[in-house]
Length: 151
Ligand code: FES
Ligand code: FES
Image 1 (cartoon, rainbow, N blue to C red):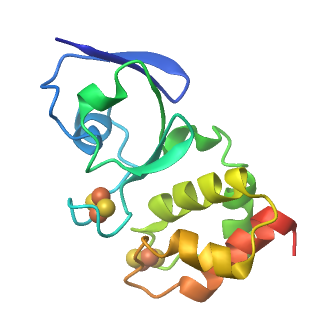
Image 2 (image 1 turned 120 degrees about the horizontal axis):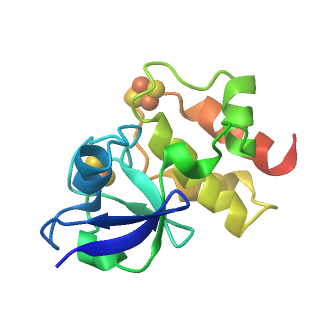
């Protein structure tokens, strides 16, 4: 039975097995390749998207679990790339290779939406599940702080 959900603001109906990981669906069926496959088991955060505004690991969520819900990927966070987190990322030159960065940005966006006055300790806690093999962690924390507070 097809799954219907809102993907980046548009209704999407996918005729695919209900147990298919959302990550496969957005990349291979919807063609949105900004969301990355890292580990496939919920350990790296590269696949982070929003489901009804909350950051989730798309490798662990199945298609049937998003039926009727709203999914946002990095492509839909801000069509112009001007979300405060994206602006902060550019201003602080956060990425190196870039592979983890869509997931980092999606995680950060949900964190500061939930708590605009976030502290550094809360940023560290909230971002700890997002791995960066290039080790951009100091700039990531600084950029989340900058996006949230302007500092
Ligand atoms: S690919 Fe989903 S957490 Fe690593
Ligand atoms: S920028 Fe390379 S993995 Fe994070």
